Amino acid sequence: MKFWKKLTPEERLNRVQRALKENVDFSKDANLGYPASRLDEKVFANESLFLREMPVLNTYIANPNHIGCHTYGTSEYSFKGTQEIEREVLDMIAVDLFKAEEGAYDGYISPGGTEANVQAMWIYRNEFMKRHGAKLEEIVILASDDTHYSIPKGVNLLMLEWKKVPVDEVTRDISREDFRNTVKSALEEGKKYFIVIANMGTTMFGSVDDPVPMTEVLEEFEVPYRLHIDGAYGGFVFPFSEGENTINFTNPKISSITIDAHKMLQAPYGTGIFVCRKGLIENVLTTEAQYVEGMDLTLCGSRSGANAVAVWTILTTYGPHKWYEKISVLKMRTNWLCKQLDLLEVPYFREPEMNIVTIRSFAVPEEIAHKYNLVPQTHDEGNKWYKIVLMDHVEIEHLKDFINDLSSHKKVPVK
Ligand SMILES: *Cc1c(COP(=O)(O)O)cnc(C)c1O
Image 1 (cartoon, helix red, strand yellow):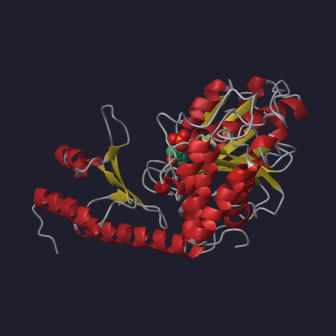
Image 2: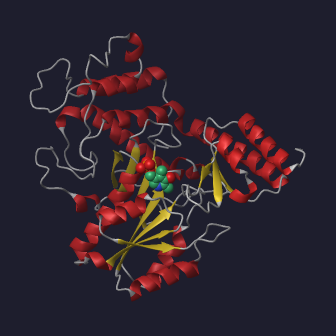
Image 3: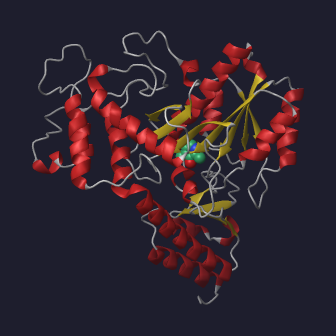
């Protein structure tokens, strides 16, 4: 890990304060041109020492705008201090965690995983249209049945079409055969350009798609394609597996990755992360964004620099080793839960190395599902699954109560 290091509280505070000093200070300097200011001081006073010692809240109050993309070209001069922190945190994620070459990627802290996924599809749609003269109706999105709804949302916005790739009912895997058949039928319908989304942890199952057979099949057909990894949920879990993770930029076929910091990392909402290889993001350059220095390559426009500082602060509080430990504890709790379910002979799905357990709904009485706030696959009729996500606040005590309730319902004594 070249960039991701654990820092002391003093080091973190000093680094963020230095960054804020390098930004314009709305509370001191003459800043006449901005349609913005620090947060309203009647509501968000920054007088207490307590607040001054909290780098993230401090940054919220200073209210830097990270509009635009700070890995590419020039950026708004006024917030260069905290933009540098954003670049530091992107280096930790893109280079250290997902093995991009230093300086060989672009990216930004997006408002969430949804935007990061839409950003990816938008880039590739425009690339196919600009470089290959593709027509809208010739571009298709391929993603599994278990894919997050941000994909169909983006498909709708971008006026594309989504071909769902079926998954196995039990293993949640995409078979090579099913993928090949989906590509074939897309070709028969006149599709020529393929944007593939592979999941690094689906929302409902935590299942991880192997992107290798997908790209092998696309290469059999010799069609132009781009591959995006949706690691919104699993991006801070799966790379901390026992074995070596190969779903990263060491695979030359992977062009971009979405990772959410506001899920596993427990950052405040508004912290998705988008990273892609160099040479791609300019496909969504909005040249009309002329009042923004360096112009805009992102979907959202204005966004808070405090979100970047929040992710930076979390990562430097843990450092990679503590984070690995934290994920290991969650996986041990997941193992414990799976073992209890095995003893009760309750059927479930769990992706090894992930911390989601998705249980067959027939094995969980509705009142128990309700009592423990299990999330159903669908809120409509015919729900087949309930999931348990082993987040930080889900402890063995809670799981024990749940297992006890399940077993007294089944009238099986707990071992
Ligand atoms: C949560 C999630 C998203 C969307 O993220 P938001 O941050 O809610 O916009 C996308 N993909 C997957 C797999 C997710 O779990």
